[in-house]
Length: 281
Image: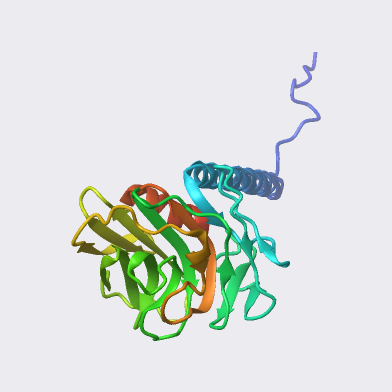
């Protein structure tokens, strides 16, 4: 009797068929991996944006003034600080204009351009007469003018504060009729590029510390803690403070805190507002 093979009618894969199968599996694996990486990137971006927003608003809760300029038009720049001060700025009809030139598309929609003829005015005081304070903003200018302040409330008398640039470097004044005014560091800022500058005044140590793009670049010891500084709303201005050379250039995200922020907080403020984390893998 003839026995039939159990393998009758079957055959193995040819080399070409095996190569086709392997190639198909490899292609499917690549597609799945790309999809997963895309999902991870989107999740990371969402997480970073949430972190930046939460951190920015957490700091904003301690601000006495915060101007984002994200309105993009109109005669009012809203105070978006979370203390409920509602210290909105009046935008003049000429000389001060909204601009789409910003420091980061990830962190800003609009900035404010000042041509040196006018500035923003306010009708509420800041409450900084006897407190520590921090002034922070983004700036873009090519001007080399002397004592060109961006923010201030001192009307030539040396009673109050001024903050900005002089001959391209960070400069300030703090006083109560007697005063200290000085450069803070020697790093040039007027290179027609966007920079984040910060000035921090600690009354206890009588120390003024300045930061450029998240890094400390200078300190200055003051002659006094200058108590009872002038704090009149009528003297306070942004872009064209009461004293000295009017500012020419762009400002964005102007924030004033009634406290002295730490170096770590200033670094976080710089990185989150710029959206720098979004470029990290």
